[in-house]
Image 1 (cartoon, rainbow, N blue to C red):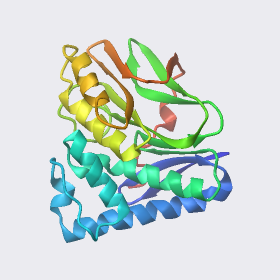
Image 2 (image 1 turned 90 degrees about the horizontal axis):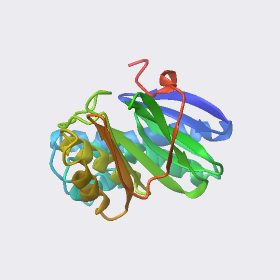
Image 3 (image 1 turned 30 degrees about the vertical axis):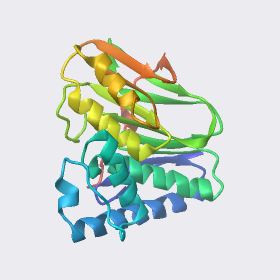
Length: 238
């Protein structure tokens, strides 16, 4: 098993898989980006809108998944771009026979795993670093996060981290953005979490803001972990 950082344009991913699947993963990144770049060239509004967007018949399946995810989350389709790409890459590796593959696209993670895996949450929660203990699964799992205090993504809220779990990784990404947008303090966190959990195909979610950690739905076991900020995925060569 190897870990490799890979960049293509504005996409920076960390891929963890067997060596034989690395070329497949990188090719899948280019496939996904090609569809998205083509769509933006046809309609630049697709890239900038913060509102749900309806896909066209001639759009590729990556773009269609982003558009579909934007509707229940009530966000723009680009809010789902990282999750959609990560899911596509893992699906390509899975189709090729991989049983263990993790793609971290700037904090939006798609994975399959034949063993227990710990996924760290990039936030200080009460002075501790926490991780999710993910049990073995044959199905793709999405763990996507948004933050107002970490990373370059736009967030209209104040949460240190808002994380959503779903088998639909594009949807998890869009909903993580939506959750982060509405949390502006510790008051109301419970209601915001319930709102996201009531969306079809959302498994669970959590958020941390103003010293309060809120959890809703079926969230994996949360355990303490060591700080490993050096492995956080970010653009290194752009």
